[in-house]
Image (cartoon, rainbow, N blue to C red; front, side, top):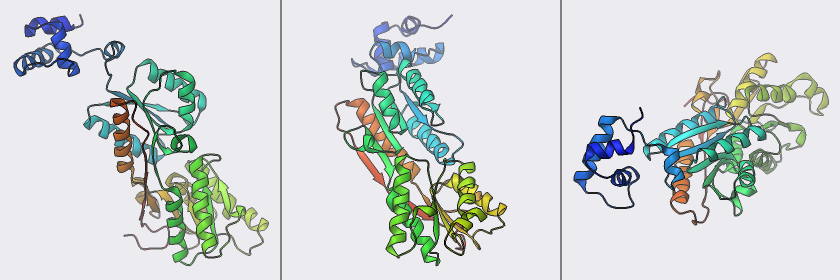
Length: 346
């Protein structure tokens, strides 16, 4: 038989209301002596409060929902792990919904989170906010992290993301420093906003030195190994060379994510091209797995821990004060040098 709040109250010699005050941190003060008796009774009886029932009575579940596209992409895996740790340290748990960028699945998870009365949401796509607005009349505190478009910046929810323009420029500049001028761009899927931003950074840096920045050097692909492989084959394969007015294809690739770069390295091997001797590669994400590729990737690292800390801070601030104005945090990445660019690993 389940232990009830009344059982805890009887053992501690207090009222059930006082047990509620201890569990919920109020609204009335509790003496240290009474608090210790209640906590000892909870421990002895193994009492676990019903978080959903508490939420229905106007309390908090101390639970946050996360919508993420894929656990296979190491960037999102690292983000989820950092969120679990950060929220745990602040006394919250994390429920994860893996959407695979499917709007129907996204809506299903949002409904589930709302039904379970999560205190707030962290989403990796501003599109999810449109779905949330359709599902729920009362706004749930939410923060958009990573894939921020106009909805996530102009009057929308709080947001945290890396400066994609700067990161892409930084990566391409590093390839140019190695003497590369014909640099292909493997971008993310269209019309994800960060795909356009990373293309813009590649194009601006190429134009800055008078190098080719035409659309013929850009391939859109899913954020996956297979996407990166297919895009690299399209840019570097014999068919691409036949279509090009140049005598040779790109000597380097700027790749929008580590997971795509892993696929690009596979494509180079299939084409008999050595990385970095024949084709240099610099990507963006800087995940821990990048150093285990062969050769180890040079990549602009997104500061995942700082992004997560900012996102959780914004979210908990909004949970405490729903009237708080949205906050927007933009961070910059740093270059982690491997060997895929032609440098010796540092």
